[in-house]
Length: 301
Image (cartoon, rainbow, N blue to C red; front, side):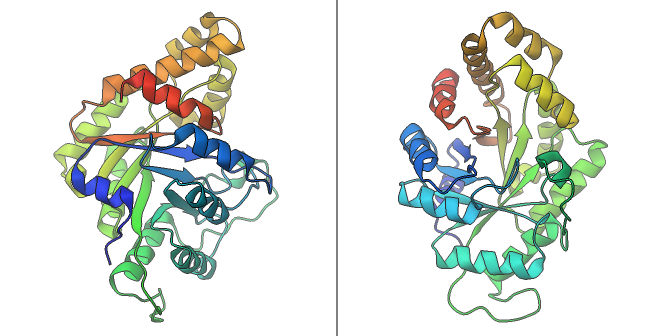
């Protein structure tokens, strides 16, 4: 079944799409969700609820319900690092019952990067197999083992991509597999190296991938040179140019650096929004949801 979500309608309309990220906190309070709603309002089409991105936090499923109650269409994020296929499918059925209409399928960063190196990972299936499982639930109404689903199941499927993954042939192969498995939109990792991203998008366009899936470029408002340096050290595939780090350093104090980070993010969006094959942007807030409206304003989107 085809999802009737706002995001799905936006994909069909061919309009430029803006989505954003909400980073659930390690809390039972609804305060941060309410603040996210007040900040973003109707400025974005949908908001991802991250799935234990930087450590144990409120579940993406619960955060999605909170976002929905606050008037924001959620995107349920689900990673294969922490669940086997039984738990994954159970969570998806529960999400459908709760009215969630969008899902983003990921493998997830290794647990050592989120402060839990002693935790066992699962990876029973990978993100491509998860996409295929959701698509099978959509199209055939059955689980991986053939068990028939009662009721209706309809979710718009998304996935992620790293524009800087080498070799390029492997990068495109993974993107093809995600599209063929049933992904309808792709949110990329944060774009800082604009030339590298443009080259990746051009190849994806030549290979017909941008006709199969909607590409949303990830963009991130950096709050300081220190944050940029830490991200570069931890996630070496982000490709943050030294010129960006130096520009943040020269901005001045913490507040000035954050303002400069927002300005830089706006400039990146302005440069990439006209690229052939790009359908929109995904603002990776990193927990700084209050900056999302500032980024949108700075970009003129």
